Length: 200
Image (cartoon, rainbow, N blue to C red):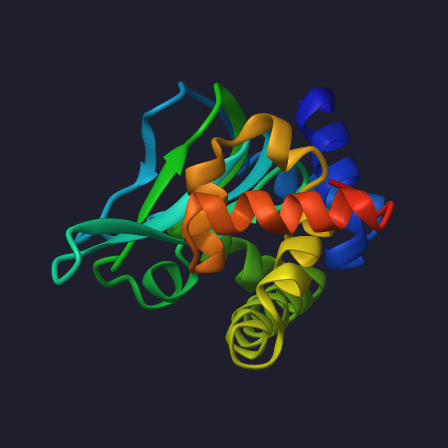
């Protein structure tokens, strides 16, 4: 229990704004899970039943594009970030994406029904639910605006800022897929970034 409380404090307190007392009330509902590299947090056409926080590891969210016969990455989740298919979780209908561990990973997670119970028990946890919804709305709209308004290089720099050391942890073709480019274009971007003295 103390270990889970500490992990919740470290991983989520800034977003939730919940006191230690209210955090401890919810700790009993959160569980730890290990997910080995290549396994899935959730799969396409399966309802996402859990909300997770990444303690260790990195995940990709992707879908299979039948027209191009390619897997296309749309998000990454790494340490101290929530991992979930949010719409599937909130509405409890089948997920449209896969969420795969790219490294051996460990998460804290809370099942949907337990989170609903927490909402009933605590106004602070209700506030968490609102902040969580705002967080994922911002994340989703930010991704859309990045694709509309930013260059590939700017999107790459945003990705590195959001997930430090991702270039050392994730194969380049996964990053290229996220950016909507091919590996040679990614290599040119990384070269330009290095020449400017920015982060790789």
